[in-house]
Amino acid sequence: MRFRRLSIAAVLIAATGSAALAQEPPPGTQRLERREVCTGELVSGNDPDGSWIGARCLLPAGSNVEKAVQRACKPKAVCRVDAVVRAEPGRVVVHRVIKVEQVQAPASEAAIPTEPHGRRLGKLIDGVYAPAQSGCNSRHRPADRVSILLDVAEPTVQFLAQFCAVMVAKGSDPTEKTLRSTLEVRCGPEASEEQMRKGKTGRKTDIVLSRSEGQQLAIDGVPYMACPITQQSTPEWWIKRHPVHQGKIPQ
Image 1: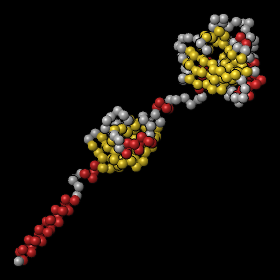
Image 2: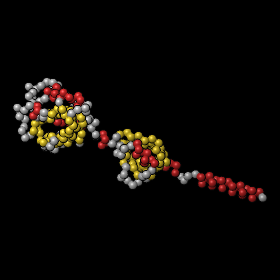
Image 3: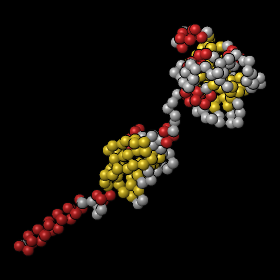
Image 4: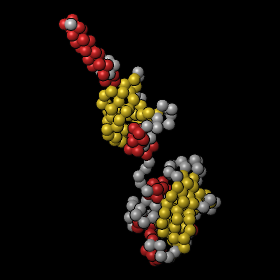
C-alpha cells in the first residue's frame, strides 16, 4: 500500500513537471522579438512583401504598421521608426509601431525652390527688349520696347505703350537655357497702378514668355532681343525701381 502511494506521488510530480515544460515557449522564441529603432528611406510599392525602412526593416504589406508609417512619412523620405520587431534571416519584420518620425523630406521636395516663380524669372530676364526683327534702334523710345521688371516687390511689365501690373507669375521652373511662363496682368495708365494691383481696374490679359535652348526670348510668340539700358529708351519707372539702378539713369 505504501509503495502504491509513492508511485501515485511520483506520477503526480512527473505530470506537473511535464505541464510546466509544455507551457514554456519553444527555445529562442522570446529572443526573436525585441525593440529596435529602424532609420532609413521609406520605400513602398516595389516589393509584394510590403514597404521598407532602409534595407533592413520590413513593414508587412497591408498591415496596420505599414499604414501607420505611411501616414507619418512620405515615400522616399528618411524616417525613424521605434518599433517591436521580429528577427528573420537577413531582415527584421516590424510587428508593432511605438513612434514614427519623418526626419528628412524626400530629395525631390528638398530641391523645390522656395522663392516665388516671378522672382526667379526676373533674375533671368529683367531688362528692356526690342523686337528681334527691328533690333535695338538707338531712336527707340520706351513705347517702342518691352520693359520687364519681375524681381521686385511690385512686378511690372511695360508692353510697348501699355503699363501692366503683374498679378500672378506661373510656369515651369525657369533656367538660363529654357523657360515658359505666363504673367497674368492688369494693364492701364501708370497713374492707376495702385487700383490695378488691388484688382479694381485695368484690362486683364496674359503675357506668355518662353525661351528654348539657344533661342531668343519670345514674348507672346514673337522673338525679342535684350537691349542696353539707356535714358532715351528705358521707362523712368523701370530705372527707379530696379534694385541696381535705383533711380540713377544711365548716360
